[in-house]
Image 1 (cartoon, rainbow, N blue to C red):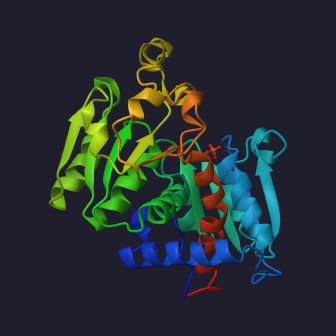
Image 2: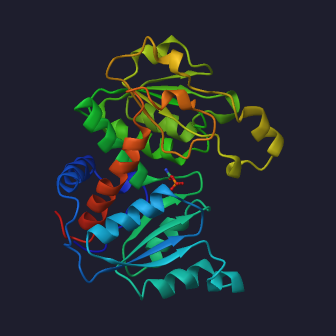
Length: 303
Ligand code: CP
């Protein structure tokens, strides 16, 4: 395999997506496999992260890789004015893969075009978060037994939420039924709705969490992201628009599971955490196995 990056979930075929979930299951069964000993991976987080960075770095260590990089640019030459171009050109000389997060949409795509080594997008602005999507799919497959025909209700910030954008595109391969719940200001962008229409898939849009939740197999909650708003007043108006409470789950399917990419602010009440339908902390564990799968697949250690 030549240099293959993962910048958008659309960089992977349906078959590759399924393969990653299979590999993730293999890694979950055997989570210490030093099959990439000697490889060096750069972990470049220009934007804050807890789960994505640390689960990627855990995955790298479990695969036997060495990890270099930074979390925040204050101690790098970016703070002296070095350009993004020069930073990537330099670091791609030091490693076998770059995993990067950046606040600017398209930053990871640009890096993949100039880098000598594969680039994995760990989130670029409001655009894409493909490794999150793959761990979400692994979580759905584990809990529902299939990826086909899932009824998913996506709730919250569907405008700026990069996780829902990537997930929508990936689930379009699997005859998914979508319900979008968002306030008018934060609805799913037109380009993603057009994407579904072009694939012959229908969706329902709502502004309230109503009885449709009782038909869902997966409830995918998202945070209203303060960092994406240019107008603080607009953020204040919508920040607590949906709060999932335990009693709202009473009529839901027995096997329904609640996912959330996290971090959470107020959108899931902590009394939900003890409900067996809450799956978001298990989901974070699945991130390690899925990221082991992504790295080993892109570096050719697993086919
Ligand atoms: N899910 C997610 O991207 O979390 P972090 O921002 O903590 O990496």
